[in-house]
Image (cartoon, rainbow, N blue to C red; front, side, top):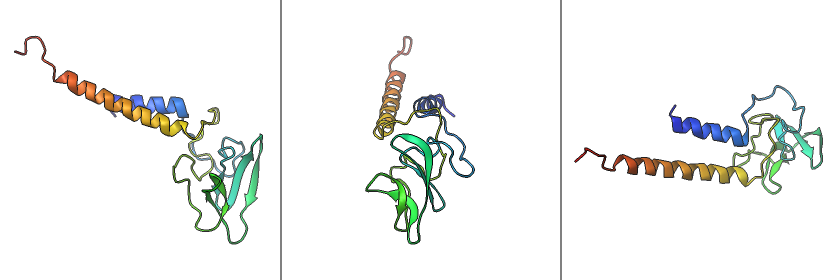
Length: 140
């Protein structure tokens, strides 16, 4: 792995949090249930209310599946086929990519951060290229 990729990954992990392993079974904390956004395990929805508290469980009724609710911007019992968050910010599986000690970031923060890091990498690459083409003493 190149140094630039390692630096990028280190910054991303420092800001977003280190990914955790997918949990086995039902989530036991609001962080594992992705707080108010929720998550799905089969046809069971897990989420926490606005005030946090214990993880709530809803088994989807006949004719619905656990999936992304585009209107509300969270996981819910919805009409088939369901699906995942189209932005891929919130995984459907419980406990995936959640670091329990990391506070939740606003939805706009992660894409903005990723964009800033991409721009910074492009600027760095341009500077490196420009500096490598400068004349050095003794090159004449």
